[in-house]
Image (cartoon, rainbow, N blue to C red; front, side):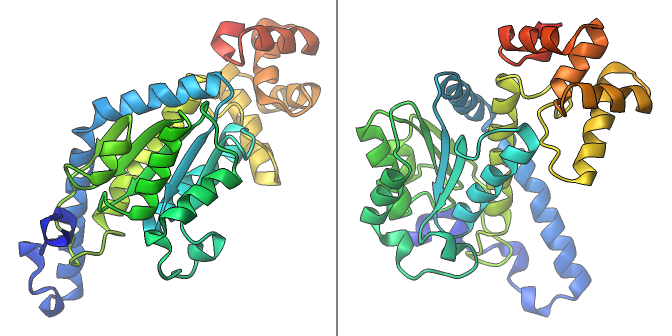
Length: 294
């Protein structure tokens, strides 16, 4: 099976990789990386379909759950853990699951990616329901752990998506929306942490960001639900208020305090010159969308 996967084939441009100078290695890696964005662009229609399903899931109280093994699993977790600080989401709303558990983040867990029963147990641990979206991530598109996860998700009527880096991926058979970004042979044969990993990260960026925009977590191009958990982020929150309203630093700081540290509320208070209570009510009626509240 492996010899038929483009991600496992030998790259003709790098057959003498071990004889190249450091500069030549970096140049060929950079040239190959430039092909990744183009490969992703060919899957925009499929990515859009999956984003719309994620938005619909969020609107009915569902969750987005990424699941994968190795690099693919780590990338899913990376995207998931960035959502609470960036978009102010509950940690349960976007989750990443990796074969072998948290230990697999830093150490290879032998056999985990082949354990089909483990995938089912992992999804049962997070109490998967039909309202959720499960996105299986596998560069090869044939990881047993991921296939089992998607199969189980379909059994309980959860929405399923697949992200693979080979055409005709096995996981696509179990995905309501399949995203197949064909990145081709790696610079280092079979090392799918390279171009395939970059492609997966790009797609995950798109899914989470576009979905959050779709539920009102962004105003203009600003992270208005940012969670100011440290000094740097508090200053960023104030700068967001300034950018959104044109207010000076002192005004932004004053309204930020008056809004009890809620950026969206401060923006509405400034732009409509209304009270904290009215701004909160407007945002609530607008389902968190700042433009609608205005």
